[in-house]
Length: 386
Image 1 (cartoon, rainbow, N blue to C red):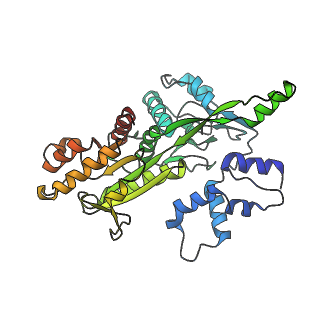
Image 2: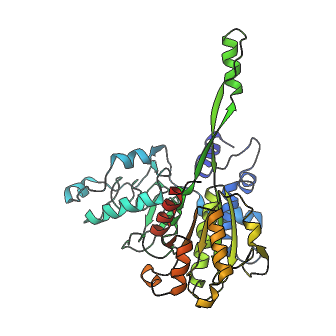
Image 3: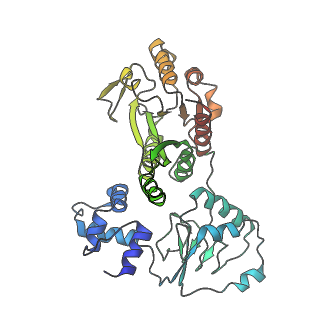
């Protein structure tokens, strides 16, 4: 296999091809393929789980481009040099030539989806006409991060058939509606919520012996070896997720919540444990969605206090369901896990009308289950000292 092919798959898809190894074998053992298969398992037809079929489907879905790309442009640099407040004009539009043969590609993988969506909203407010080619407007055939038929890795496809198969998000409507960060969590804004969750990472530093540096400097000193110390940054994240899955009022939100935290786990390696309850937590939670496998709260309380804890539920129930045991449990959990928040899918203006919601929010800081609410919850967590 040629060096260019190997470099292509390693750079774009993080699939390293070993010497003498076939592309199919490299794909089958890759983390990229494993995550793709996990995310798309529901789309495979009965009996179509053989390796050859899956590899071909994978390549059809994620192969980055069918263009003859000869140059890769730094999308972050291009984006930083641009701005969203450029006014549209016919002169600018006429100067842009439709690019029928693309030999350049802009790589926007260093930008978050939220950054792209916010800038795209600014651009659309000023765009008055169709654009082809170029790197700024929502158009076709160029290297702009928004549009279709162009070459923009990890951009946003708006309408059209795509062409390069390299977009990270697809918006099929011709008219684009920006993400509403105040809307209740759903499939359309889950990536914005994921961006907010990035803020709960914790970096710790520990000193270790720098063996290589110690030897090199010791040799230069003529055999006088003095230990050289370096700091090693270690990202640590532990999350406990408690989901109320016991009533019809929570049904519309459970799948999206699970998708959000599943994405979080696959994109950012960390320790995530999920438990379930019905309406409120007493002295046990459940480790399975059917609530058969009981886990005592006293066992949960033995875990590392550095866990971040998310309670997900509408907090609405009959007043008698909030009793002494339940309130003591919330008190114990929030005392042990100081970085705890409650995410509520009910609109905030309804909370004041529900007695049990008012009670629970006195024990656990409560925020709306929206991208904006999650962002505020994360900020609240980060303010709390260990």
